[in-house]
Length: 183
Image 1 (spheres, helix red, strand yellow):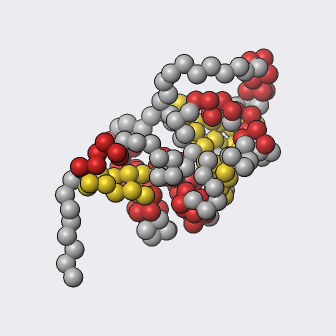
Image 2: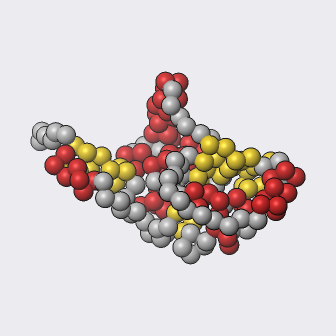
Image 3: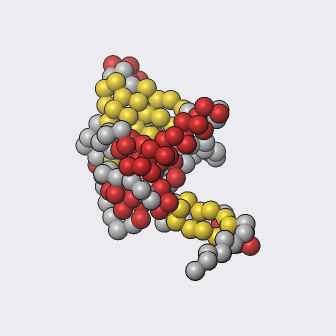
């Protein structure tokens, strides 16, 4: 289960699908969004959490990757971890969000279910080398799919607008010079 369909969620979806793993990606946009389209293009399943909230999902998952930027979403998904399952947190969140949880129930389920929550950071050279290899593999399986993750290209003069959050967009790039195509 991939929580979030931004750049990290999309790349995780593509990688898991490239390895033949059944993958469900959840986000807030509807089935006609570019996010849903890209998930389905690689053979994944897309769920709109506005229509199917996390609390209504009945499946249990061996692996859940949180890529939403919301610690609250990660905690809402803890009940979806299956026996021997892992919830992997990738977001660095700040603020003071509070959430009430049943700690005894959580402790019971995690200990007897042998469940794990871990946080990760990819930061050394070997991760970047592996990342390039994975991107090449994804592109070989689904040509041009990765290019479609870049949903907005903006000139450098628009840099302030680029920082505005737009949940419909996946990844925005900034052009520092125009590339002129010859006819």
